[in-house]
Length: 193
Image (cartoon, rainbow, N blue to C red; front, side):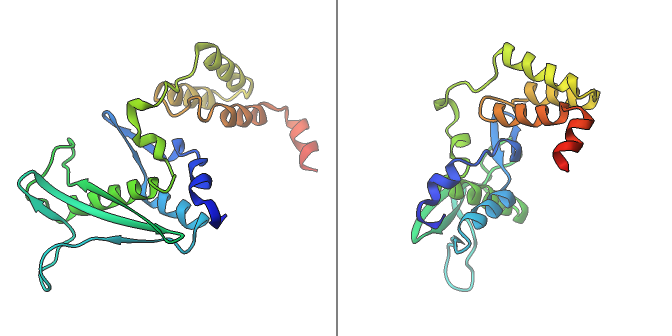
């Protein structure tokens, strides 16, 4: 797996681990680190610091706002990402507190990992084709969910389709999972034996 980490990470479906806040999609930094280390256990990262010795800080302050920088090295390839320190409305902060700096460092880390392939497509924004499901695909999934006999499965499915968590990128895996859940109990037991 070590020889082409980008190809391996680029194939990982991150839709279950990403979260939409307003018009932005975020990937869980902890999950991103775990996935990176599963594929490349020797990967390393560095949070850059600015200032003079004795008073260094993990962010750079400018007139435009504050920025953090993280480098991630995989197989001797280093990719860097710079990220602004933002408030909860995604506005630049001129004098951030420690929590705001830490949050920006973690977001920057997730983006630097994305440069190595993991979830890169979620940061591409409008450059990507529409991945929402066609009504016929939604109907197909709903029918399968109804066959499970579990109303919670049906409601969760509808909620995730509406929220964009179930889309063309993960349609097949969701469909396969629903097919498994919809199997009669006797058939499941015979497969388990």
